[in-house]
Amino acid sequence: MDTRNASLPGVVVDIRHKDYRSGLRTLEALHFRAGPGEFVALIGPSGSGKTTLLKIVAGLDTRFEGQVARSPTARLGFMFQEPRLLPWLTVEQNVGLVLNALPPTQQGALRAHLQELLTQVGLQDFRTAFPGQLSGGMQRRLALVRAFVIRPELLLMDEPFLSLDEPTAEQLRRQLLVLWQQTGSTILFVTHNLREALMLADRVLFLSPRPAHLILEQPVPSPRPRTMAQMAVLEQQLLHQYPELLSGVLHE
Image (cartoon, rainbow, N blue to C red; front, side):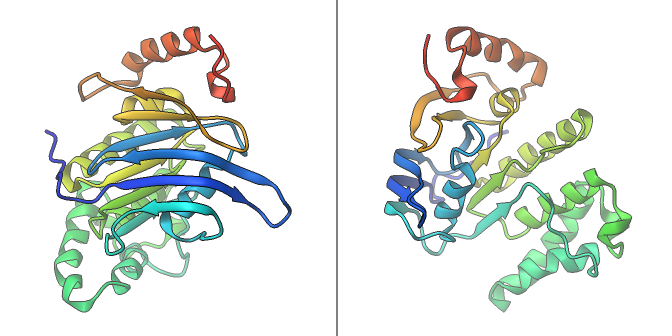
C-alpha cells in the first residue's frame, strides 16, 4: 500500500558548482527534484561527490554555489554507511539521543513510536543490549530505527547496506520499504548497487565522474513489491544499452 503524503515537502537541488579549497571541483551543473514522498536513488562512480551532495542537501556543507530548496522546518534523517552507534549506550539510549534533540512536546508520542519500531524490526528483546552485543545486521536495523523514529520528512541514506551479506541486505531493504510507505518520507538513497536501486526507487539518477552532473534519469515503472531477481532484467537492459553507465559515461 502506498501511503505517501503529497503535503510533505520534497527537495529541489540546483548546484552550479561545488569546489574544495584545493581547487578540486566535485559537483557542477547538478539539477534535480525529488517530489514529496518520492524515493530517488543516486548512482555514480566512486569519488564523484555523492556523499558531498547529501551533506549539501542536509545543510552540513554550505560552501557551494547554487541552492537547495527544502522546508527549513522539515524533520531530517540521515543514515550512513556505518551504523555509528555509541558503544557505551544501550539500544534504547542510542535512539533516544535523536529524540532528545526534538522539542519536549514532540518526544512523548515518538518515544512510544520507538517501541513500535523496535518490535517491527525484531529488536524488542534487545532494548537494554549494547551495540557490541548485536550482530552487524542487527546494528543496521537499529540504525534504520534511529533514522525513522522522528518520522523524517526528508531522509538521506548514504550506502546504508554496504558490506552486508545479501540475505541480510535483502531483509533490510524490505524493512526500509515498509517504513518508508508508513512514514511517507522523501528519500535520497546513494548506492553503487544498480539492482538495489531499481528494486527500491521510483527513479534512479545516474551521475558522471567528478565534477558530477546528471547524465541519465531512469524511472522504474514496475509495481511494488519487486524482487532483486525481477530487477535483474531491467538492469541487463540498461547496461546493454549503456555499457559504461556505471562508470558515469552515457555511450550507447
